[in-house]
Image (cartoon, rainbow, N blue to C red; front, side, top):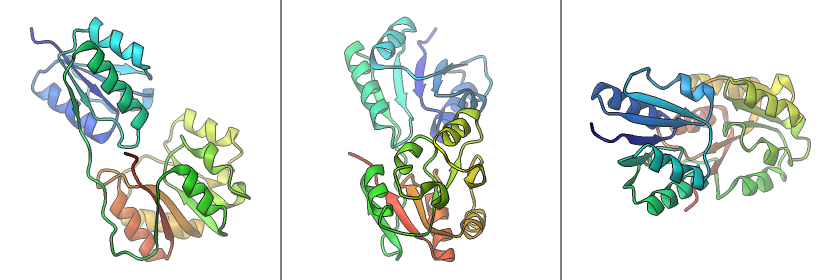
Length: 235
């Protein structure tokens, strides 16, 4: 029997690869960070879902224990620390590594866009502005954005509809009325409706490409007159 592959990532790309493995009867382990992510992976006797985060040493043990033949890194393009750990674990154990990287969205020539290179830089920019801010970067960086003056009044956050994300936001002091718990993808029209409803003068997004709905957010911001703060990818 052929050795299994390990697909790292509960992204759209990861789910597509899991579906392909199921259809082609390829044994695969698919890693996701949460139970919600696990629920999106196709149910198949050939696909085993692994829930929870692993550190580098745990990854090495996992690769050896399950005799993984190849690793496909389909994690989010901004999960740079996870990617670095996977690369090192594969190198340590001698397992072939492949990275699936989605394309960046394009915004050259569109007015009303400010490119920054980190969440901290986005926070710095927004700290010198006024008006409502619509965050589309998920719950992970909510603590950083909470450093913005008057953040409880200014910030609206669109996060995944899972208890952990909601609890995190509420614990940080975000107002319940300013939290939008929804799973994408989001159309341009729906984005625009949300931006108008919240009175967003700024929209914060990562340059997550077509799969991440980047172009739809840009177009919606253009329609509503919002300035887009684009967090570019790290090297």
